[in-house]
Image 1 (cartoon, rainbow, N blue to C red):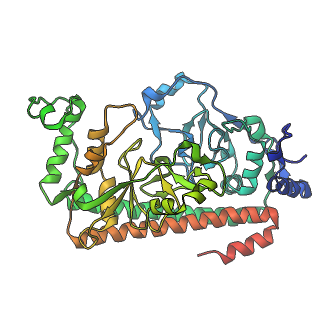
Image 2 (spheres, one colour):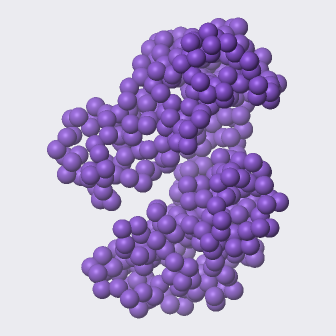
Image 3 (cartoon, rainbow, N blue to C red):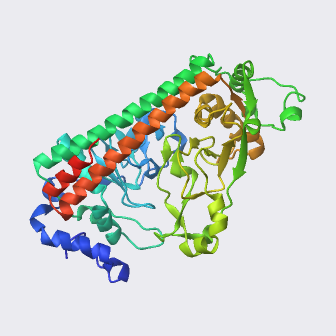
Amino acid sequence: MAGAETLRYDSEYYLKRHISAELVIGSKPHKFSKFSELNLLVDGSAFYPALEPFYDTGDYPFIRVGDIKDHVDFENCIKVPFEILHGYPTLKHVKKGDIVLTKGGTIGLAGLITQDCCVTRDLIFINSSVLVENDYITLFLYLSTNFLYQQLIRSGSQSVQPHLTITLVRNIDVYQYSDLFKVKAANLYKESISKLEESKINYKQAETLLLDTLGMADFSPDTETVNIKSFKDSFAATGRLDAEYYQPKYEQVMAHITAQAHDTLNALVTIKKSIEPGSDEYSDDEQGLPFLRVADYCKFGVTPPQKKIRASFVAENKDKLDELMPKAGTILFSKDGSVGEAYCLREDASFITSGAVLHLTVRDTKKLLPDYLTLALNSKLVKMQAERDAGGSIILHWRVGEIESVVVPLVDMPTQQKIAALVQQSFTLKAESERLLAVAKHTVEMAIEQDEAAAMDYLSGHMA
């Protein structure tokens, strides 16, 4: 039997979509190889002591499952001190050009490593950095295809928590493309990355314009942690007894914001909370309604939600669920976990959200542009308010009453329009990057299922 080796007799293993991939492999055995035949190693971190005490106390990336999306999220991943890692010999390091696969929870997601880092034991990695660039990029694209994903989930454990093993990954079949095809596929991927970098530059320019306008580009809060307060000015005024709340840096940022035009969030938007259907309604049914959680979005966009609401529940409650779907212009704003993460929807959503995600709607878009407000909410000016209010607990929770009282800096409409234009251009570039990446993945998949000539024709027809 072609494909990863396993002893399975359950019906799921023999679904048509799995059999079709097996037939393709069997019809072109000369086009497929194992990692061992390519002199590539498949490995992973073994057990190591907990790293949590060192989270965000250094600058060396520690990549976890949640960081694997279309691209490995090095900007928002946990950072640890490099010097402590000599005490963790079983914690594996990967290099630029290596590829990782998620093996637990959401299995089979591929990520291309773009800088040296260490990886959690929930990731399997391939030392593809020993290959030339075009080769490891094409291999990454292949590992991102639905064709390969069907191999992985077919052979993955079917326990309550599906998972992959290093042995299974070592035995998957890897398609061998021609050198000319690798050049074409890799160039398209590189163009996608170029668009993504342009997108980030535009977004950064918008952030810089906001801070420059507010005179806070060089703002550096006080690092002093001691602040002497009377009972009247502390607990009696705020209801808070934790010392962290009264750090001078929070008073400094609030003083700067309130010295210029500002208003409370509650005065600027309406705030609604979604109604969760309950965990009993969650399902792996592909026909289910996507259920978006805090981990499924960031300020740069929404990733396909991993959880779904079962189709039968959706059918029974269609009208109610339709009302819960956020519309274009709604700002998603997190109150639990990664608190204060804001994203403005570009179009009507086809999902419902967790109760941890608030829906903000600007009251008067002639005076306040949603894209400006979203950028302001993601700025350090509001992030520090979130840090102050939600700090002091293991799992961060920002109360709605505190969110309503958030102070938002306001600027004139021409500046708002400039900021909004930069944000919109950023998202246009990001969308084009995603389109090019999707074309690249489909191209390498088409080469397997048809041939490289058909794939190149498709690629040529879908270039910008």
